[in-house]
Image (cartoon, rainbow, N blue to C red; front, side, top):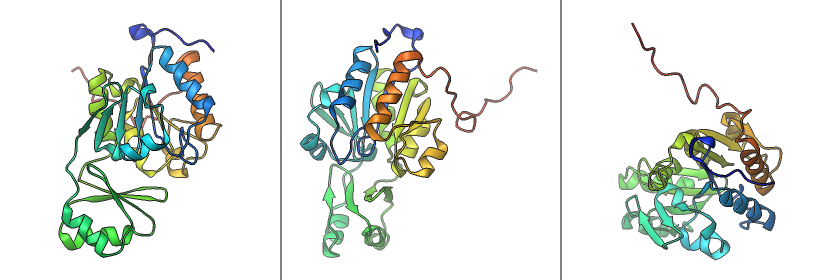
Length: 249
């Protein structure tokens, strides 16, 4: 399907912001059909932003196509990366050494990024206990079986905001798509939110549209609708965009 040329206000949604694991990727990898759809959207003049909980090095190890994206939001909102310049910009505090040391002492398998401290279920109990015992203000975020500890206020939404600012795109002109608990924040930020068919029920319940296809097939479906008519028949849920205060006398 041919894409529409990007001509200012002629296109409503200027960008697609997508999660990685469970959304464009299945078992960590993105298939050729999904990559081709992402390229079609990019060739039509739209922008692409990847929003993931993964650390940069872990993503690069499995996904050699980051140049498709205008920005990467990594570590669940703690790190921005520009694939064109290879510049990574931390936008959150680094992990406290005391927290990492305490989790290692407790035998928790983990990886520590520029900011995120990541492990898996059922070690969330040890992470929460360590945060409590150390008197830290960090919070724990779930991504299906993954568990992430992050500084206060750091979410995929808080990371997407500066990424969009760098691209000059307002959030209301972005379509977001995801599948898991940690996607709620950035999906609610976007002008239109989508859940792939394999998404958690709670994500589907708050999305503006749910795709018929799972993972990459669902994202392909969403891209084809963006290119065909800008999802003209889909309206954001009123509770996500409540009317402003009344004006006039």
